[in-house]
Length: 149
Image (tube, rainbow, N blue to C red):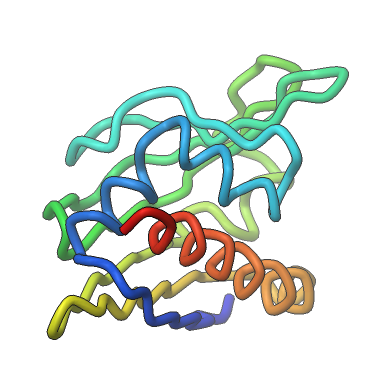
């Protein structure tokens, strides 16, 4: 497991970036880079369960819990399982290689510009995918945050 870091500067307040990033309707817009029907079920509250979903023929996704949520400062997610055809899977070979992986978002605002830092634990086999997809997703988030700002 490796931790990859992706960073982008957004001409908007940390509060705006945080709100747009996590609000369900705008979340669905910037995360289309990962999957066309990206969404989530659950809460971003500390300690809460959240399921990151995508729907095609079947409902698929990742099970996670929010380790920390300090609005407009820091969000930490820990992945622990997957959703496969509506069934929650929390053990076995399909989740062992990445269960416990984290995704952390740090919002650092200076003079109205927010540097968003994303640290993601990933398995080597997804490295190329994340190195392509995360920068595109962050550019889309930036565009949404800077529109009508």
